Image 1: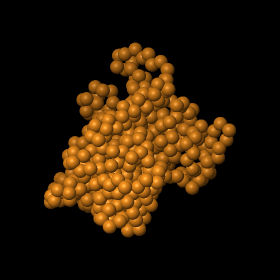
Image 2 (image 1 turned 90 degrees about the horizontal axis):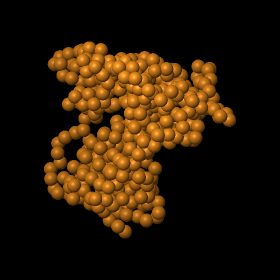
Image 3 (image 1 turned 30 degrees about the horizontal axis):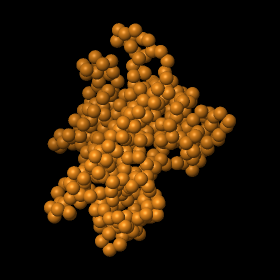
Image 4 (image 1 turned 180 degrees about the vertical axis):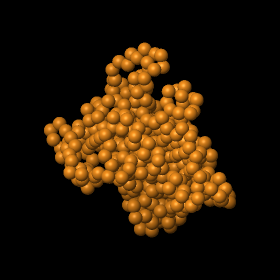
Length: 426
């Protein structure tokens, strides 16, 4: 049986960055990943979506060329080329990660882990091909899966997940997006820009319910101006397939006929393997971890979406670096650094038109936590660079404690919000 110092299960941003950092520390590790390296983020999530966002952004800007003194020769949209470019971007990035692993001689086992058992001071990891390996440490980085509804099941043909919609080589004439969170609003923006008729259905009273209420309301207005039809406070009771379309039955007694449906009602932690009974799981299926990403089993860590924290690639990566540091200190008998990952300080970005960037507490959360707060706002209509760029839609909102002006929340709706929010994080 092959033995490794550390076994990492899952090759997403958390897993592959942890492997590289351990390699830099000269600590042996092996990656177990049944798909290609990069996980959901590089292969079926963040990166391909952002490639589509850029194409949609340019397509929208072409329509406004005349206002910049340019002849508007917009031409026709070739979505097949958009699709091909998206795949090329993904391939370059994934190939780059694979190159780094080859260069650093980090072994990758390209199969699924099926079981983890603890034997004395070692972990025994069973693999799908019936081979097994052992390790001193295990890092669970198994990610998350799209959530389904009782009445709406994903088939990746007509009812799509965020993975399935990225595989569409032809634009549908109409698309119903069930779920008005980050994923739903991003795809609504992109496909509306490409001319698809979009219906956005959200069960909660507002879209983007995790964002600051004022930001969410302004985004609602922006999406409606883009021609997106939005229903909030409405659920889906059934999805009936017809020959060439689907009919959604809604809780307001209305029906909606569309070509395709995107189901984006959230994601759930994925732990599709047998684990020791001693591993503590939270009610939502996430792996319970302490401040050092340690699970209830000594030597076993968990990072990324499977921990149920912020479901962001950069959260997983930062958690992974914490784990690498813990293992390095244990192996080299160094004192464990006295630091803690403050999830509140991790920025969140939504790549809609306009973008949203946020960090810290919403106005409501800040008021509940601190009582007296101060709120400052500045509109992009008064920003010179935004005016010169022809994109003045949005504002910056900062929230501080009244007693000492300590900054506790920053929220941006507008151009380059995803880059600007780093200032708020600092």
